Image 1: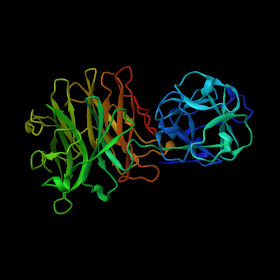
Image 2: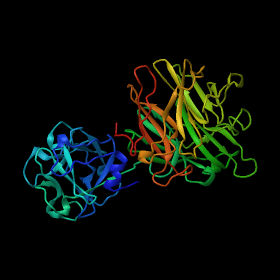
Image 3: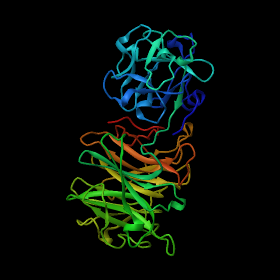
Image 4: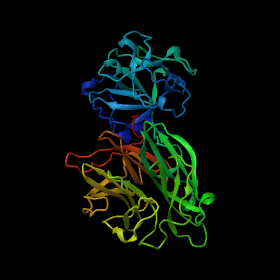
Length: 467
């Protein structure tokens, strides 16, 4: 988690605060949509909190020890008129003065976001790193009832004054999809539940041995199902370098593809495949030997990905330095070597991934080194799951130094079933002090232009709202 002062928030978001006495319509108040903050009361040091993490309409808002909960995280929505809405990340509902009351002491609640002026707030700079939040409909300030410092004290509106209980720090938050250090995330959906399978990060030389599985129904709240495969304990031909997993389902069985190697001796990397009867494992080695051995094809045998077409045929992709692509046999654990195609598009390094939309296939990959802040994602298009592919069509994900976001890459993409909504999972340097072995997993929206091209992704500090 990254926190910063009001000045830091302004610098990161290009925010110009509406000053006391300035007419909102004249205020130069342009805020990047989607940034999230904790609202920390100056008097108590506690965070504005939807009580008991309730998602119900009219749930009360109070103060509580800051704890990283989504019910304390408020997404700022710039209305373009000098005001913002503040939506609770856990519920998507807005900070609201109950009943649009103009009275002192009127309760603060969450309510479905609307055009009501009792959900519109103006920041008044106090001149010392804090702001007052002024309700548009009443001109009154967000306050802690009776100036309390206690956990659970409710918030209210009250005539603006000099009380520190009316002064709030906007603390910018970086909120990765998964707590801790995880990289190379593979995101997919089975039977309406989303799953993430990442590399466990934070080890020198990327020497971790374990894979976890995470599940979610809304892309925000993730359950860790623990270790689903440990290459040191479960794989006879590897004991190290558990990297970049992917998964596919066929006939009720789940096939888990991964990179791994030895810690000593021949440290070459190989591709393996494990199998389970559940997407959360436990997985067991399906072959007793690598699916793709080091040296069988050019470059390192790492970074597998699987795409399954509408006809049920699955395709395997892998490789660093060049992308190798082949249809899998029906057993999902073998392929015809004569059908392997190799592509080396301009800028390709690793991390192949393929999707299909409207009859067009999108072949995506990561460029530069994962230790570089310039790690990024580019793509090409084709008419089949193995091409031929167009020339490099452009970069769709890269760093944003204005937000401190670096090293965005090794991604995967998922479509919300039955819709044209798409999400991209990827890793970046952990904020604030990450590097190429200390990375965190993020999820953001991915959009297509009318001509079918992929719109560059806007990386965010805190990810997406719940589905």
